[in-house]
Length: 114
Image (cartoon, rainbow, N blue to C red; front, side, top):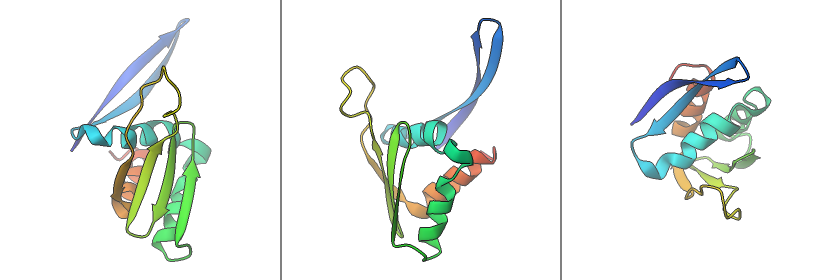
C-alpha cells in the first residue's frame, strides 16, 4: 500500500531527518502530501476534527493546511490540493478516501507508528 523512508536534509552544516511516505497507488499522492505537510500543523489538531465527525458530534468538518484542504464526513473524506491555481507547482488530483482509514493513517503517521 505504501513505503516509508527517512531522508536527511542538509543546509549550512545543519542536518534534519524527514520521513517520506509514498503510496503504491499514484492517485493517493495528495494523501501523502497531506500526511507530510498538513497533518502535523498545530500538533495534529486535525485529529480532533476527525474525531468530532466519527463520534457523531459534527456531520461535517473541514481543515485547510499549507498544501491541502480536507472535507471530513462520516463515511468518506475528500482531500484536495490547494495549489491547483499555481502554474509552476506540482498539482495533485483530489482523492476520496474512507474517513476511518484517513483518520487511522493520520493518527499513526503523527505517532510515528507507520
